[in-house]
Image (tube, rainbow, N blue to C red; front, side, top):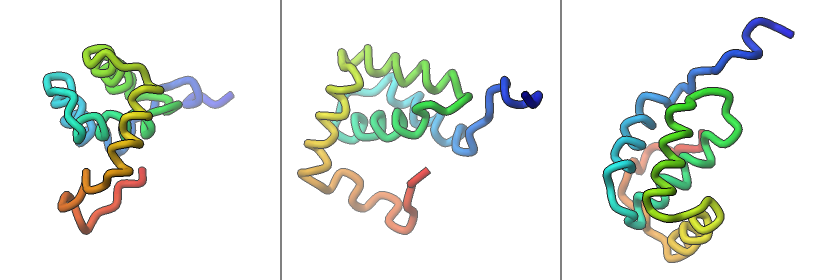
Length: 96
């Protein structure tokens, strides 16, 4: 086993994601915030690091009285209606 295999990694988008997570922790469960929470839950699922972000995403879920399954169900409905990210960062895809 290599030395780095047991250490947490730093996610390259941690800084921008940290700002988003901080706003989720104080924000309301709007359609946009729910979608942001789901997006970040997917991004950090199984990531070996960014424990603070993972922990705070769980806090936001609890604060809004949701579990992961209900979050994903609600955001699927929101995305089916469309337009949630329309006009935001048109030139930039966020697939990471």
